[in-house]
Length: 157
Image (cartoon, rainbow, N blue to C red; front, top):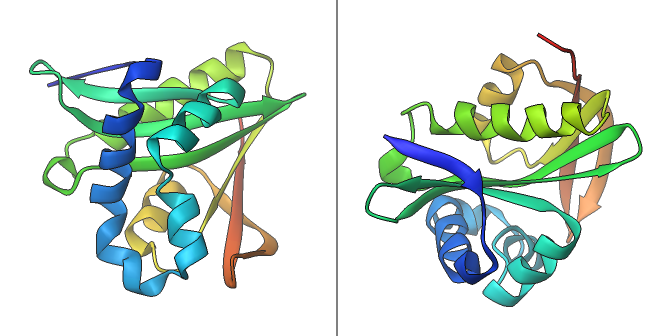
């Protein structure tokens, strides 16, 4: 059982470690720049917290086992930095984090949410599709590798 809540600034190191744990198995499929951007340092996490809302999934023992960040510009929200530590994957934590971020974006007036991912993250892509995200066709350069945009409308339920 985990609690989903907004991250605290002093948790930046644990959030960075969570991201590293989740993405380390994919390091060889990323360029150095792309991996470093995907797994930011604690200082970069603190900077991200200035511009985005970060959420954590935290155990009763205080271990951060998942994270997601959300930001918005007008009526469009954007998600990034979603990660679940490998031993905790497949336990509905990703769904809880996603629902929390989407609910807050919807409450803030967002009508649509986007995220970007790489082809290496096949399991994540299946998860996003299962949760209503579809590819927009927009592909950008992410430190020398393709980055694919996915989007979905946000609707009151």
